[in-house]
Picture 1 (cartoon, one colour):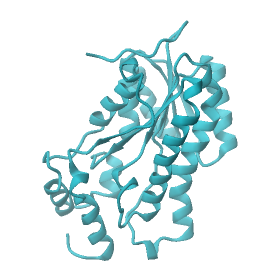
Picture 2: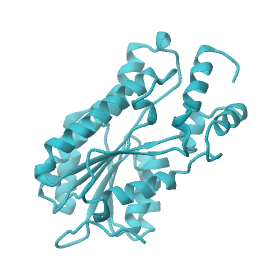
Picture 3: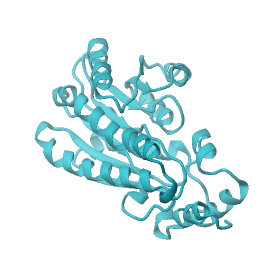
Length: 273
């Protein structure tokens, strides 16, 4: 059964997806467009926005492209004003923008740390805070934050991202409690090994690594962006109307054995895969 959008009054419901021009964010945007949402897509890259916007428009949605760096609150706030002026509402926020690279903690520079934590943790707070007035005015606003299983485990080779994702998980639960009185639900989804152009470039950089990761996934395959998008569709739908403060892991059972983190840790140390 296809989830239906949240009750909306006049007009189509509206979703904002950060990092929405490519990969996982684009898959989420397409899924929501098919469910009847109009979309605001945010990204630092105008080229990604233009390409992603074409894909989402092909699904029949009105698309607003927002070139914005989520690390800069003033620009995020201005982007949300643009959403308000264009659509007059916001029903769903998906905080998907991320940055990551594999490196031992002792080699991560302060600038590298700030870049990842700024996008992942600061960016999630900035977007949530700036979106709050519009989400509070919605009949039932919903936020979905994209985290990772190493938010509650060790993340060797990804100390910056693991710390930031852990912060986002804590923020998810805190906002779920604080904003429940405003009828805003806040949940998270934790993708496991997912293959996109970005992850192939940053993480799954060799055939040996791909095989080793696959061997550590009980279901025996990498995930696709659409696997995660389906969970986001559910979490923002009325069918999940009594769920808030939760994290749904979409990883084929991988985190139960911690296989990919073991592999990344070995790689970060320079050990053979």
